[in-house]
Structure formats: C-alpha cells, structure tokens
Image (tube, rainbow, N blue to C red):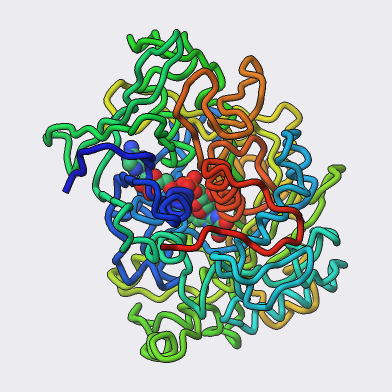
Length: 577
Ligand code: FAD
C-alpha cells in the first residue's frame, strides 16, 4: 500500500545504495524512513542463483533501457541492463568484487574521498570469507565476499596460457599494496554460492523495524521542491503505484528531513531534471521551471565498453565448457547441475561465468586499461550481453550450445566522457534520452584498448596451453585482421560491461559539471542528496558495485552525523534496536 505521511528520510530507489541506507538510517530507531522502489520485491529464486543472471537480462526485473542511436557505433542502440527490483542492479549483476586501485580514488581529487579515506570504508563494509587481512580486507562488515566456487578445466588452461604469455599470477586484485596487473580468480559478492545482493544483506535484516516502510512497484515521478529564501528545498516526493493510470501519491518530509536519490545513474538525473534541477537551457526546452541551474546534471556518464573474442572447441574436448555443464544437448538443464546446487551450493550454477581473468596495461597509461574476463563458454553472437541473454533462453529453444571458450575484453579505465542522460519527454514514465558515448574520446584510446585486447586474446589462445582445445575463432573471425577491420568489428559489437556512473558527479565547481558536493548534497538545493553510482566522478578500474556500497555506507555515516573513525578502528555501525 502507498504510505502517506511524513518521514525523516525518503529514499528514492530500493537498489544497491538504497538498501544500504535503509538499513543504516533505521538502525538506532530514531528516524522514520520510507523506501520507494519502482520494481518488484526481491522474491524470485532465480535472483539467488548466480548463473540465473542469464535469465535476468531483458526480463521483468530489468529496465530494458537502450541508448539512442550511436553514430560512432554504426548507429546502433546499445542495451544497458539495470536491475528493477529491491536490491536493484546488485540483484542482477555478475557479482564480481573489485574496488579498483588507490590511484583511482586519488584521481577523483575530492577532499575526504582519496584512497586513504575510502579504503577504510571498503574494509568496514566487507565480510571476506578468506578472513581479515590488515589494511586490505575486513570481516564483520555486511558485504559478503568469497572466492568463486566453480572451477572448470578451462580456467587452468587460461591461467597457463596467461603465464606463457608473460603475465604474473595475481592472488588478490584488491590489494592496493601490489600492482593490479596479472591473472587470477576474481572474488565475488556471494555467500556459499548464492548471490549476496544488497537486498539480502542490508534491507532484509531491517524489514521488521517499525520505523522502516518499503513500498514496491512505487515509481517516484518527481521530487516536490519549494522555494525558501531564494533556495529550492525538497519537501517530499510524488509517486505512483503499478501503472500510469493510478492516481499519484505524495510522501512528505518531516521538518529537517531529506530526500535521498538512489535511483541509479540513469534514473536519478532524469528525476532531478523533471523536478527542475539541471541545465537551465535543457530544462527550458521542455518548459520546466528551473529551480537550480546545474549544467552538469546528466552529463559525464561513463561505462566500461566490452568486446568478445570467442573460439570453438576441438571435438576431443567437446562437453567441457560451463555451458555443457549446465545444459544437456537437448537444451534441458542437467539434473546434476541442479542437485549439486540444491544440495551443496556448488557446481556451474554458482558462476556468472566471468569470474576468472586478468588485468593488463596495453598502452602507455600508468594503470591497466584492459580487463580480460575469461569465460569457459563460446559466444553465439559478438555482443556479450546478448550472448548471455540467448543462453538464458536456451531451455525454451531446446538447442545445443556449442562448446568453446571466450575472452570478454573490457576497457576498464575508459577515457570517453561524452555519455549523457537527458530528458526525451516530460513524462516520467518514458525512458530518458540515454547516450552511452563509447569511443568518443579524442585520442581513440578506448577503441585501441579493445583492439589490443582482441590481439592479446588471440595470442593467448594460440599459446601451447590451448593447443589441445582450440578449434576455430568464431568472433571476430580470422578474416578480421587489420586495425581497420578490427575497429569495424568493435564498432558493430561493442557492448556494456554494466558500470554506469558519473551522471550526477561529485565536486565543488558547478561550472565544471559538479552536481553534488563532497557530502553528496545537491548544489544549490536543500534537503536533497544523491547517493548512488551517479555521484562517482571518474570510473574506477573495477566493476562498480563495491564502490557504490562504499559511497552509501559513508553517506549514511555523514547523514547520521557520525565522525569518520580512524584507520584500523573496528567498525562502529549503530546497533540495531
Ligand atoms: P541500482 O542498484 O540500479 O538501484 C537503483 C534502484 O532505483 C533500482 O532498484 C531501480 O528499480 C530504482 N528506481 C529507478 N527509478 C526509480 C523511480 N523513478 N522510482 C523508484 N525507484 C526507481 N558491479 C560489480 O561490482 N560487479 C559486477 O559483477 C557487476 N556486474 C553487473 C552486471 C549487470 C548486468 C549490471 C546491470 C550491473 C553490474 N554491476 C556490477 C554494476 C553494479 O551492480 C552497479 O554499479 C550498482 O548496483 C549500482 O547501484 P545503484 O544504487 O547506483 O543503482
């Protein structure tokens, strides 16, 4: 039921950051909190199963967003998955746990958000299955992290090939005392083989608290703002349940309360623009009253572009891919995979198939520009996201998936900054105008990273380690050789590695695009913060879930007026009532 009334905090979006805040802000029992989530409750079993990710793309638990036509990518519209349920994208993601490097956070150039400041919070958030490691990993935090539980013969082959190529083994990609380069296992946000999303870890334990109200299928349409002393002040939000025909509801803030925008890097800037906060010229074009002129709103959108290099398997080795371990030739799921998962939370259903890989520096950058995600499976199409989605539909189609292996190549520190989220219409039910902006960097470094990635993957696949396994290259295909041919392949197939950030960037200078200050308060407005992936100003060389949780944990402490604990002090989260 809709929840009229007054709240200390209204959280717009019960996703990754929203779940963290819902828990922390209700823990001491003094504040009333409302969470409005546009999507469904988090009850579908498929969400818990890591391999179930293949069934979540383009599903009812996804926003089904596409970019506008990207001229530089053969006028393609790029699919951009986003979770639409309690837990948000943490409930639909690939579960990889990466923080990036110390340099990534120092590069933000924002006081109190440098590497030393954020490391402490990463450690506090974490509950690492391998135990605490001083200055690197934590235990006793909320975010469960463990090693992948499924191991395929092809992982060993890939590791051996990477070694033969000249890479070193990296036992911990999150250790800031060492280089990020090397090959190895990626840790995952799972708990004993089940997805450990932020719903399960943060919101679920708080659901019984009488001061927390969570409404699902409740789409926020607008933040209600009022002028006070020449400054826009958030008063509450308008929202609607289920469908556009339903009458809109309103939730109000108590005096001194705050609206916390946690709708993610696409919907937060859309909602704020609809509420009169954004670039004045853009808002006026749509007849929207400008409450705060923030030209950076919705700009600076960044993502990790990805490409595929895929191979089929020699006949003698047919049947060893993860796809073979999940599906029979008829396309039916193997009983063994199901029982192994049901009884022991082991086997191929515990993997999202990209939890082994490498980081490499392929150009003259100071940090790795390439992440290789090695998948012990072939790709049917060169768009990796589409391949995953096709795999999820295989059961209905009753086909055999060919044995093989693939390298997903990710430009992990992309330079393109031209992506944006702007309004397409003033109807909050319409998707915004989304430009993904891949390959728009002036020096062409991003496409060069992926081109280098394909060439490196080809060399690795030709190492002795793969001799008994490799049959043919399917993508891009051996006919694609010159730089020009590779670039055409990349423009025609580059896809999202799902790391959207930056569209409400943190910073002090509004004229340089800043939308929120270092306390995540929207510049020029009162009682309004953005707390989600959109505040991250520069994409870290990592998947972005861990950084989003870190941002939300810090924000909760700021809101509650807690002082930042000194390094190495034990976590001091408020005790639940
Ligand atoms: P979200 O978690 O997306 O939450 C936003 C919430 O707001 C959603 O629940 C949404 O439904 C809701 N919402 C939106 N609009 C409204 C509205 N108008 N009213 C009410 N509610 C609204 N990161 C990793 O670290 N490792 C990975 O392996 C990884 N893989 C990924 C794979 C995929 C397919 C995806 C989509 C993401 C992946 N990520 C990964 C990225 C990571 O999950 C995100 O960076 C992170 O979850 C973003 O958190 P958020 O809080 O900003 O947004």
